[in-house]
View 1 (cartoon, each protein chain N blue to C red):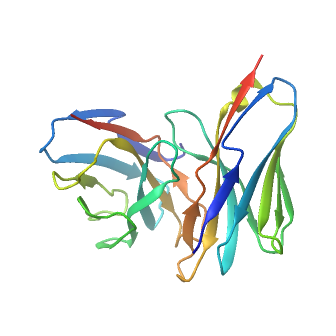
View 2 (view 1 turned 180 degrees about the vertical axis):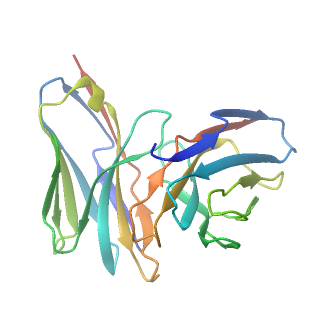
Length: 113
Length: 114
């Protein structure tokens, strides 16, 4: 898991509620990423940030929002607009662009009922 | 379309045996190819990363090969252990984006039985 922490490990929410997942890294990496993992599918990129105060949409950004106010932190908010939010969420970081090695956090399993 | 296909989808082997996992990709242009190991409920951990010029790379009992001409990679596990039970994910960096966008395979689930 390197120097990336995600909290909480498990999260339960009622439908219609927004929820924020935490991701912190102490690797001094410039770039951070959020992925979603569903059974039988490859990881899908939600959002990424290559520098503080800047972030870009990934392949499945709808219903999600992020912020990057500090280099160490990249929280992900799952909004009520996300149609199917129950999934395993992974945060990662790298020294630069996606060409570089990415280090993953331990993940947060979100269940929305 | 940029894709990464892994086979088999799942595999069961006996402890001590060897196995080989396959990865075919259609990503172009190509930057690098990575293999990750993901234990159930955990984040992926990097095993190897190979660029165009590298055709083999080892990490302990794990050996990855890359044939950039045929766009194929394999991950060979020698003398398997129970702790090798995990999902193995092939990831290719490349595509038209200059950021080296990652394209993930769906993974191969390996179960090592005693």
